Length: 431
Image 1 (cartoon, helix red, strand yellow):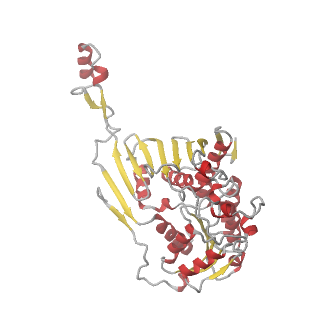
Image 2: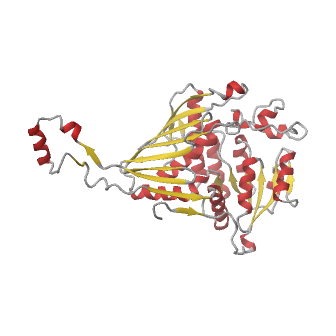
Image 3: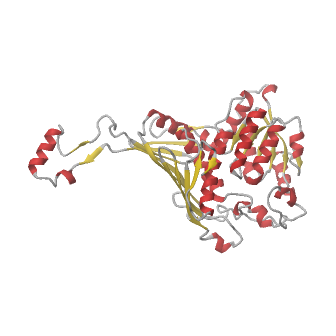
């Protein structure tokens, strides 16, 4: 690629025919707004057929048929999909507290699984899924799509080549400022106990009377979600782990609060601002998110001694580090004789010269790359390819566990009054 280059992919199917043996038949469990987007990405992959969907809300089943055709089989009970012998893979788009159970049950039923992030609702569920992936020899992909972005691939290559130098600090941010961005979604006028199987939806969550707000805005409640950490931070964690060949963070400390949206919706429980510091063996990772301002949007800085990359959903920019040190303000304070001796001893000309020959390259041209499309397209295509080839995905059980684990310990810190929470990777236990 050249400076200013584009990385372009198409979500439209190509003209090539797919052999019957390579056809992948998919069922969807939980077909809400995000799962409908994921399902569409499946339908445009050559050789993939959307066969059946399950959802506890009747109107979601109606909408699925409107989107994907009247031949689509529908049911309120997801277990009917697991019992089918004509399905190769399951897409899971349910609330977080259902993910682990459905992943394990689908694998036990011989299905490969694409599950929206986070992989888990609790830390211990990750070990169960890792075991199930091995025991049943299934393909698993968690839906943090950025690891399949060509920009992230390019960034990883640069890091491994040493182009950024030593990386000691990474910063990410994601900022929103709308009711929908804060998960206060509209409540459908037909959302009631007749159209929604409330008991089925609750599952392992605490029993309580029907509440349409909890159903439609479930990310606002601890019983079903981890809020900002498990919805958004988990994406960033997974990307950083991929870039840096890292596993789970050593520790996390989180500050934040429900400063705005709880005043508007007192029933909401999760914070609308979080600031988390994650510790890794060789670098620190700072993540900042707000639901109260959209300034700066979404992005990550990977900061190295030779240069920094700024990367977001659709573009990446490289900023070379200036390899010069300004001696003037220090050396000029010396007596003139000492200044001359210093210049002579260091064999430099003038007062400003490269300070670290051999460790810093000369300044390079400003470089910028962007992409056209949605990384979810590539993430889904990569999953389908793994289903066909049986090669592991980039976000199977272990990476999915590590990303979710980071989000969970960040929430543990927040909910314990911002104390530091430490994870012992060797013992696989909290310290």
